[in-house]
Length: 264
Image (cartoon, rainbow, N blue to C red):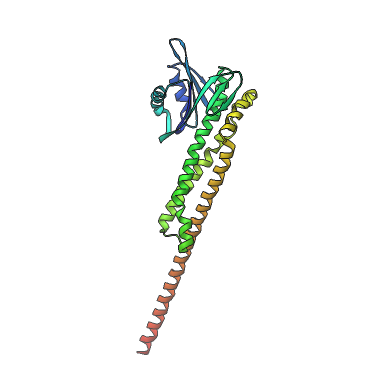
């Protein structure tokens, strides 16, 4: 069976979404997640978990069904992504829980077991969006330190440098503000016995290592920000120096002119 995870937006309006979902099936609201059990011919069809940070996990749906559900989700999205990020798995029911070669083995059909694993899946796809955002930022600005090394300065105006600093600040700040979603969910404070399912999922997806790499990339962005800040200060100091030089030159011209007129 098919299990897929999508990140479609920066966030979902969970309260409104919860109210809307009750028309389509059995909906249950958790602290930062809504679960929907859809039925077909009065029999369970599949499970959907909607997470507040813009991710949704499907269990037991076809691709066509997922696309239709994602389209109906748009009115509840905040800052919709141009292109959703997606991870795909399969799942079966077996005696023990495991994840190998993108296949998830579930020991039970219990909703909370699926939710525990879904937390790990949702965090992973959200982390992917952070990784791509920061990597794109690094790729788009890597010429700046190269210019500084080869030319001794950054070939941008003060306005251009200020704009680039603003872009870096917004992207870095966005990741920092949302990084708490990569922590262990508070859900497991109430259900500690389910945390091993979450841990196995994050271990398989290398979430902890990827977070470390992400933090290093954020450090690179911070260094770029400091380079631009120093260059901006340098340009400002240079302009002040030239302004002072010009004023001194004008003052000398005035004094010399007065002396010449006095002699004449």
